[in-house]
Amino acid sequence: MNNKLLLTASLIAVIFTMGYYAENAVAFAQYMGNVGSEGQTGTFTLEEALELQTRRVTSAEANPASGSGTPYLDAGGVVGAALISAAVFGGISGLLFFKGRSGKYAAMGRG
Image (cartoon, rainbow, N blue to C red; front, side):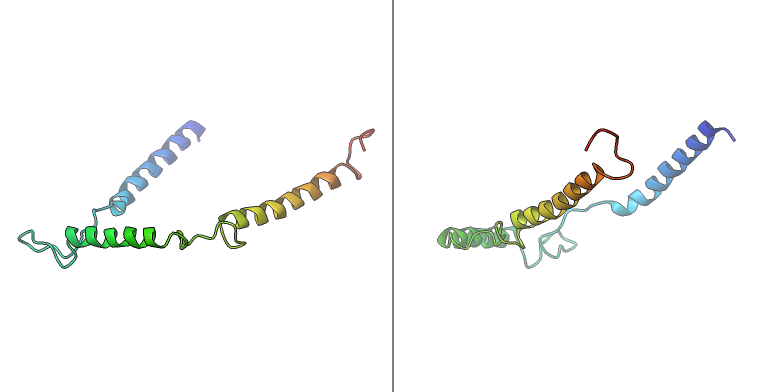
């Protein structure tokens, strides 16, 4: 069978499959509350949401030491996890690099 024909048929099959399942992945706007048939909103209105956000900002400004809650310099935080993983993978790559410079298949005259 011709390779170009097989590739084209596979590509068309993938495109049709993606189009078939793409209907299920449609995102809808999230409502603030239960919306009735007359257009009235439910218990959580826009004004209540704005009031809640205003109180959250006020609370964060009143307690600046609380921060966002993300421990950046902790071992379980962002920077700590990055440093630990860099040390582990750097150690493994360094070991493989130095072991690869010597041995049966190393180039003659180097190392």
